[in-house]
Image 1: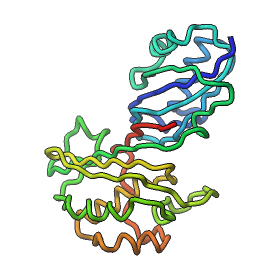
Image 2: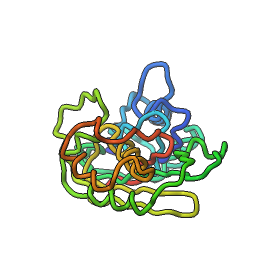
Image 3: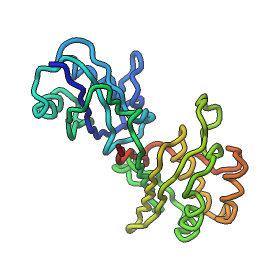
Length: 246
């Protein structure tokens, strides 16, 4: 029976060279496609909403695929999880209309970035946090974050050398920063994100928290459209794709 299936996926990205399939290296997409083809036969290609980088995690990645799928949809989650490595889990499988596309039909995304602001690194958490040893000024970071919200040209927060040809104008609908014990949690929701945008925003906010950049400089940095004016790129380990909106 021909179906168009939307999967909700979570994964630990530590051992993968990112989402997108590549020859001779482990990728999340590659593992899921292998499981689907083992289960359903034929060659299935899945379309992910976000092409997360190596080391980046997901709690709510979405991906769709179409084909002659004879196994009942309600059994797909269990069957696929039995074939996938423990670092990847299918959370949900839904049937969608023909022509639905996980990436092109997405209306927005939410990312979470986790920082451990503590003087000693925890070896058991090294793959899931950005460890920042020097104390951060949370209030200054929150003040700077307020300037990022809204619709702007975010070219200053795009990775240098990026080959993206589309417009660099995006809408950040919300950007919140909170602290729980030694953990600082950044949540950002928007209609779309440029390559490394969340990690560069995070690095810039960390620089604000260390007093290297004033919160009042944020509008000037955004208006400059100059990557060199923004802060450093935070590492991938602390980044999580949390949710995709349709």
